[in-house]
Image 1: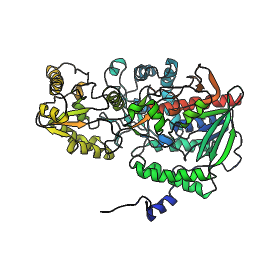
Image 2: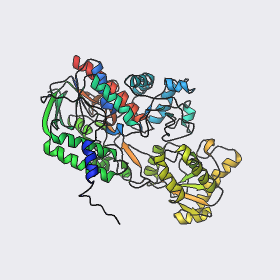
Image 3: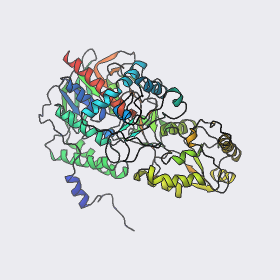
Image 4: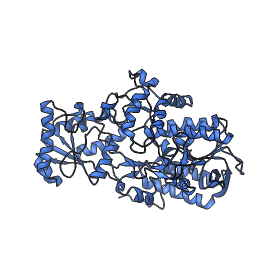
Length: 561
């Protein structure tokens, strides 16, 4: 048996690769060690921070953009889906040009509830088309290739999807369904194809980028308004800077697939930074906090989200709540901190949602075609994080046949593992209930009610779309454990949704008494936003673009006045 010692990992060849690896987009770094004053300083170089920087620079402001790593954040690791509607050119190209801002608003009002005020949500919808055009003007590419089946993330054949609950009851009764998931063109998870063009645009607009920089403190005036920041960073001319960049780059690359290996690289990067970072400060009348959420802060998660302990963090180590803490340290208030999005998707393949989900009581509690984050939240909050998907042999065989066509290669392995090996199998429903430790009578009644509705042509008891209703009738029967897991092939990842409260018109951070903190803004997952009550694919990135532009433009105006 081969054994590897962590102390000697990763070996000479990988060490050589690390030394020559690059972190991604070409960067233009500030070479001035004094870091002169700026009109606007932005903390966090993910999508929210980069869009804020561009928006401020285009209004004539001098901008400094800092990042605790080397840019990208969770956004660059994402699927690159931006939620947009109201009649985008890509919607029109596939026959959905009749999607209006009001139609989008009616859907999102039901989906997001009171996450933001109605005026802000209206603005988000009314400006949706122009934001997609703004992204394209800065080099992001989208494509009008509509995925023909329900999917959580499409293959590289398709770049426009129904990314939420648009076709699911009761949302499909409130607004006309339309595909609004605009995925940046690129192979695989294409978040970097969204971030890189924007980062290049920021550099071309004259934004000064300071990587490996962590903000310690927001400086304030006597009236409590922001006047700059204190931070620590690595000297870009030092050897430790390039080593930190390379270690961070490799760590982020393998983080989702191999978190322990990622820790090996990132821990070494952290030690370099702690050893060599130097203190600096920048004076600026406007400070924008866009440093991500707190999914990697276990203490904060235990405080606000203890029930989500079995959901693995999605993002980067920079999602440690530091941006939220900075805002709180000068009087900012928080909200929605108890909300998190974790994704247990049943689809693709779509045959899986023809089955029935039951809790430990043996009863259904949700329609199977619901978006994966809603399913996870209901499992965790109402059913102790436990549930099973019940299939008959026809549904299982159909799912296996659909697997190759509908499912991305990297997602096929866990699906195949569940369908072929990681399940409970029985010749009858009573035997299946016994093997699962479920009460047999409720399970029998649940399946009977489901099958009877199909036979009678009646609506599904849980209002699942008729397209996905087929009887659970042919033995053998299968049960797939869909409970959230923090590790393994069937891991459920998630991100936090709460953050600093902000003014809907400007993005300025709010105190507990609803007064604004002058010059201090928050955007992205550092702030409460459109998706803070519930997430559908693309809504976090879309909110980050919306909030970033809002904060950047207002900050530029403030700094000039």
